[in-house]
Length: 145
Image (tube, rainbow, N blue to C red; front, side, top):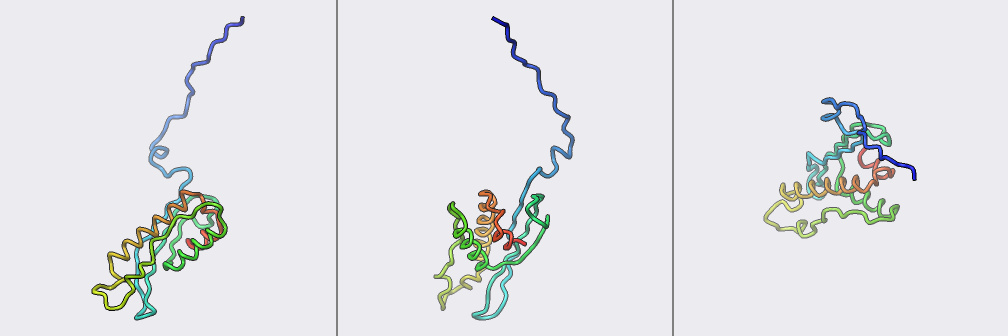
């Protein structure tokens, strides 16, 4: 029988510098939803949210972008993804129909605490889509660019 000896030498890798350790990852996509603004008066009043995208992924033409979108734009995106996708699309924060009733003691859907709760929910929705790798769809690109 031939003697076989396992090769136990260490692999040599290049030394890591500060840029390698603390620089941006090789592939990343950061999505933030921030700066809610309520515009309009009366029945034409609505809130928009700023979506900030920062990436180095080649599927995106712009490496950084900022757009403003309303809740209905997110509903459209979810509907498009459900229609085109074979997997479950994460839920959006609720519509809060009870907050739209007249004669409430607060601002309803325009109350600061509700707007912040919805902002956080919309950001979570987009980041879950990012996690599920559905970002290559044209409909996702439309909502952030």
